[in-house]
Length: 305
Image (cartoon, rainbow, N blue to C red; front, side):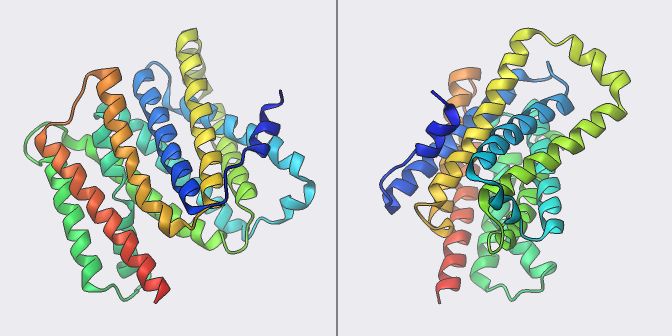
């Protein structure tokens, strides 16, 4: 049976409960994708890993888009924002994949989920928005949680924490760009263009450094390439699920449930790598999650007021 046709026919009752269920499934899929990257480790060059991931997404969404009809390609919104969104998501993936090579899966996930808190900082410092004290308090809470996870001076994670923090920062900017595009662009078209721009960018980088990268890619074992395809499939399916969730419930309601990814990341870390967060890391992850969820809830309440 045609896989894309099945995806098009995928439907659940149009209720908030269904949207929440699909959102939780989305977080499990993304956690599984990150766990696969962790399993691959350094066996595949980072550039090749990213290229396959975005090429697969561009291929699947491109075919899906073509089946919907050419008229949807006109719903692109502002092209400059589309390019910016693509580069931000590509940077986010690069930081996440690099972080997963050095840090435990739950630590990378928890630090990357500081995005809502960083969005508050950007709103105050870059956009000059009036940020209430309650949001600043939650930023402080999230920062304390980060310190509990990282524990500076302990020598456990060193400089490598810059990767998930970079992922959180680029994702916060990505969310701002996505929010602006959501008002004018078609979501499937936007995700296709993001994957396409990322694929072309990565292909150009590969061509520029082919003398080094092609021999490295030639030494990669077949099993590792299978894992790369699995990772790309999971990441793409996660984006498809996200679209389905957004069709059933508003983003402000769904976002707090995105923190379920922390639980799935911990589960996969235990099952695949026998790594369980220690007490301070677990507490720090919980504090970051509470700060992020509180920020989202305050933001949605402010918009509703």
